[in-house]
Amino acid sequence: MSEYVRITVTLTQPVAVGRNVRADSRQDTHNHVPGSVLRGALAAAWIHRRGQEVTRSSEFLETFEGTGSFGPLHSADSLPVPLSVKRHKYEASQRCRSEWDAAYGQHATTCEECGDPLVFSKGQPRGRVPLESRTTTALTPEGVVRDGHLFTQSMLKEETRLSGWLHGPATHALCCAGEPIRTLSLGSRRSLRGSVTVDVDTTAEPDLIECVGEDIILRLAAPAVFCDDFGFPTDRPDLRELSDVLGVEALEVTGAWTRWDEVGGWHAASGLPKPVERAVAAGSTYRIRCAKAPGPESLRTLATRGIGLRRREGFGALYVAPRPEAHT
Image 1 (cartoon, rainbow, N blue to C red):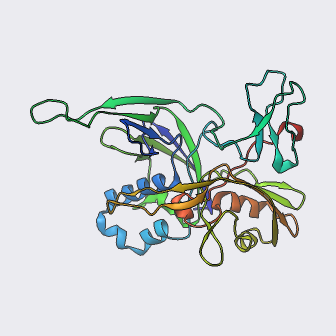
Image 2: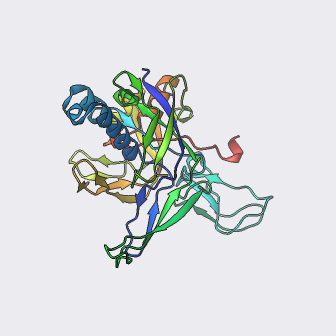
Image 3: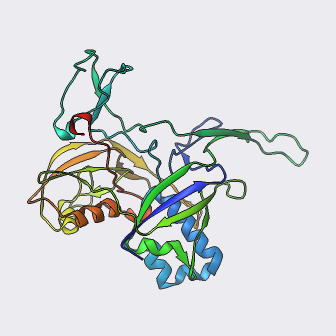
């Protein structure tokens, strides 16, 4: 299999991928499938086909615990608006320009057409992702509704299509026991929902990371985990890592538009919560100066590999945003 592959899933049932645990009876869902959920579903498919003992094999460990990257699955509408982008604070008219990107040196504070103020994005999704809600409960042995067990779950709608990238040893996860994986179960309560079909494209090539002269622009499609030389969380990527991947020296971060986030999770295999990481939020954007412009193949590798730590769990995935209107 090639260095990277594009995977597309089509929901044949609603999918619920929980987020933002709340104190009330409503349970929210992600508007996409995080890389950690995709990785867990593929690992579960391997265990279902080959038994629990496969988890001790070198093949399984290299695929799911190695240096590969399991990217998130997004639609065009679920990708975040970059934090470097400004939009109208209030609803814009049809004649107004829609976006200004500080990563391209566009630092307007008001719209030249209507005069309304502009504000930076907070990483909200670019469009509206189709969701549905379902209310369920639990019953006592007497057939009475159990106290505290009535809740409403938000879910991604059936027939939604989501796509993403796998890189490195992670690409081997799409084939088990010599047979390709054609279906998966994603999210929670998989006996009732979560079924998807899987299409794999080994010939697809990712969009090139944005390059302006000798600068590259990186945009996070998922939270990223970075640490400094002392192991403390930082909101800056490691320039040495970037230099190794790009094959040219990454000199400095000349622009950064970031927000902090905290990301936890649940490890289904052990039944234990995952550690909560202090991470840089999805939508965060960096402009980085290199000694010279990187080659196209290096930019494609970076686009599918991602940056930072815990990339095999979906952290640090990158995407290419539409260029602002003045640059199209």
